[in-house]
Image 1: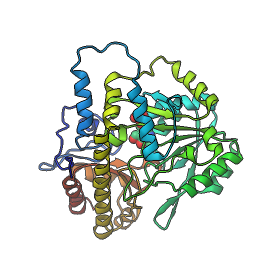
Image 2: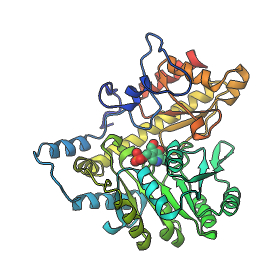
Image 3: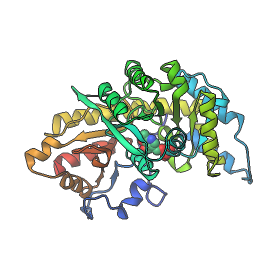
Image 4: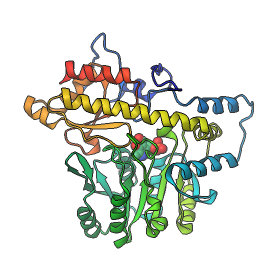
Length: 400
Ligand SMILES: Cc1ncc(COP(=O)(O)O)c(C=O)c1O
């Protein structure tokens, strides 16, 4: 490996929710007093515990060395970097006109909803559901209708009949598709996306396709952009992307949308202009240029190998060592959505008790119930492998 995915960055006091927030947060299973001798292994919020790509630091530091930070326009290199990335990674041919800056993917979701739905409208989501969607939609006054994914022999699948029934019954005209899917880790195949788009098309449903995880692909899986699925998709999909998950840049802020249809692009652009807050930050622009550079790409290729190894190792460990714990192997993202139902039933324990015990021994994992997983725990595996191994050994010895 050319890049460092081994050393553990010291994130304490360095603006990191993953390690700083837990003292103030109420995670719903009571105050936790960590056992002496067990340090924190942050495995909850979805950012990475690796040093980010050196190309990003170089780009940001070089720009920061210039002593002026006045008003600016996004550089041509910024758009070119996105165009090139989308072409090479997703096979999408786009131009500068198709790209729009978003302060965050969730902000993009909110803006697209404002254009494509009225308050009180029902919006279709799959469950389990990324908790951020629930927050944005309820905060903005929409009604969420869930279509549960089906667990088919260890693979999460969309239930097209259920989706269609719910679209009809609830007069739904807008859906959110999470691709790859957080928290299940599914990387939808072309056939699956085609079937989903056929359902949406039959009922004139617009789709917000959140593809923030599209670069985090495990074991050679390939992302298929929803925009590429059909002519209907080209005209009815708002796709959202960011370098933030791929390169752990969430603290710098900066995402973008890709919209191919002119009308949609204009309407959403107008909506996004209304707050007068949706503006690119100069350091975040340089971070994206560094991330999408040739050296950033090499780092990203290595990252996928490291994450695949972590995920494979952890899934093998769970199957071999943790009785009553199940996991569907993710194909993308760095999240595991483990299911502890059998363990809880066999041991007469509650999810809270198990979660609490993990935290007590420094494994800061996340309650899956806000993601609509009744017996699930979400675990972030974007850590140096030594930390992943340490976490699972603690789980085996102290928690399960
Ligand atoms: C599916 C999904 N969408 C959006 C986000 C958040 O994106 P942003 O910080 O750009 O709003 C996350 C973060 O975990 C996510 O998993």
